[in-house]
Length: 347
Image 1 (cartoon, helix red, strand yellow):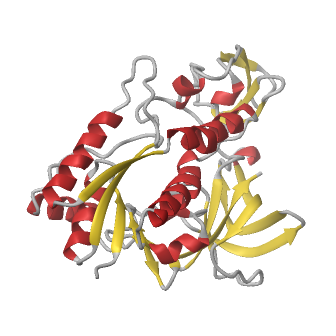
Image 2 (cartoon, one colour):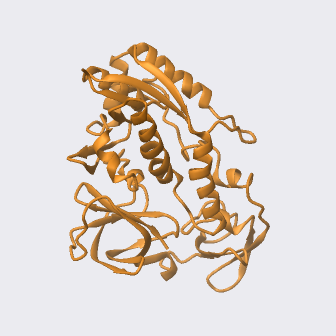
Image 3 (cartoon, one colour):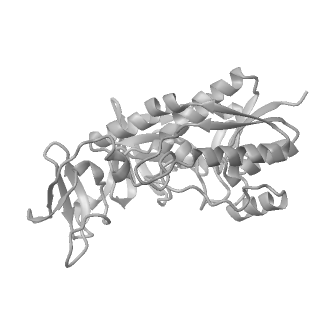
C-alpha cells in the first residue's frame, strides 16, 4: 500500500510542483489548503479565495484528493498576536518563522497525521537528510532560515521535494507538466498580509502618536508616526530631508523617541557580539566548536563564529567580523556547513 502524504498547497507554483512530484514518486497524495488568514485590510484585498481555487485546480489536474484545513483562529492566536505584541515591546519579530513553528510543522502536521497521513510535504526550498535540516541546493532561494524553529520531531515526517531544485527549474517543470500555476507570480511580503506594509497593518491594531527623531548629536531632525514602526538600520520612510541619509540606530518605546545617525561607521550600527535568548537546537551543539556560522537575517551573509558561551538563559556569540544593524526580536540562525543546527532571538 502506498504511503499517504498530505501536501500543503498554497496555490503557488512551488507547492503545486511539490504535489505533482509526490504523485510521480508513487505516494497516495492529498492536497491541503491551509486557510490561515482571510481578512481584508483597508485598500487591500486578501487573495485567499483565489489561492484556494488555484490549489484546487491543480489538485483536479493531478487527480488527487483535496481538502481545506481552517487554522484561522489558531493562526491569529499563535502568529498574528505574537507579531503585534512584539512590535508593541519595540522588537522586530519574524512571523514567518513563528508560522512554520506553530502552524505548518506543528498544527498542520498533527492534523494531517490524525487524518491518516504518513508524511506531510511542502514547497519549501530546503532539504532533510537523515533527519537533519539542510540548506537548499539553490542558495539564492534557500528558506531554511524560516524553518529554524520547527519541531525536531517534524523532520522525520516531512518531505521537501524541491529542495534540490532552483526556481527556474521549478517553473520549467511545472510548465512541462501543464500545471495552471506554472507562471503565477510569487507572493511577496509577510506571509499573511502580502503587499500590505507593516506600518499599515500595525495601524489597525496599535494606537501610536507623533514623536521626535534625534540624531547622533542630540538634535531633533524630524518627527515620526510611532517609534514601534521603525527598526535598526532602517533608512527608508524616515522622511528627514537634506544632506546625508539617516539610519535608525535605536528607539525608546516608552518615551516614543527614534534615534538616528548619518555616520555609517557609528558604533551603534555595528557589533561583533550577539546576545540571544530562547535558544532552540535542532541538533547537538558543541559550545567549543568554531566551525559554526551565523545568519542574522534572511539572505544576510554567513558570518563565522569565534565562540559560543551560555550564562543562564542568554547565549553570547562572538563573531569573526562585525555585522550591521542587529535588531532585537529578529532570529539569528546557526549553521554547521549546510546543516541548520540552532537559532535564538536577538535581545
